[in-house]
Image (tube, rainbow, N blue to C red; front, side, top):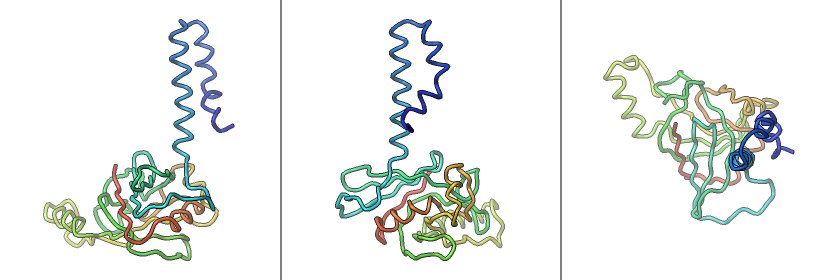
Length: 201
């Protein structure tokens, strides 16, 4: 049923098609079908207890603008997960306490079960590049001279009974990347320490 909802949602457009030329009708229907396939592609994720392609390495790309975390292996794209962040402006982290999610290239440096946020994968923020950006912003007066870069950024689950935050694109974290509890468990099992993570706009 989920596949057909774009067609149902576009019922008015289908009514308008009746007065259009055959070529235009074919084009419009094709666009609606692509919309349906895009929805399935976006929601594709790693099924629990299913065979996973063997790989010597994984890479993660987190795209803020699309609220997506994508997993790749040596053969290409594998899975896409919906995620949320710290603040809704989605800009780069400046300093401790701004609740922004940092952008750049990181690695998973640790894994633990957090008492509140469940499966947690720690990133190496701030790394050398982050500290360079931080110090430059401080020199230029973009942030206060007393500011600190912050830390403890990771990929983790929502709090219990708050998976709906991901459905609503509600950015609630202190700067981390959050996904549904089931998805966080899958990622925790799939991604080893050392996995490269890129966070971008």
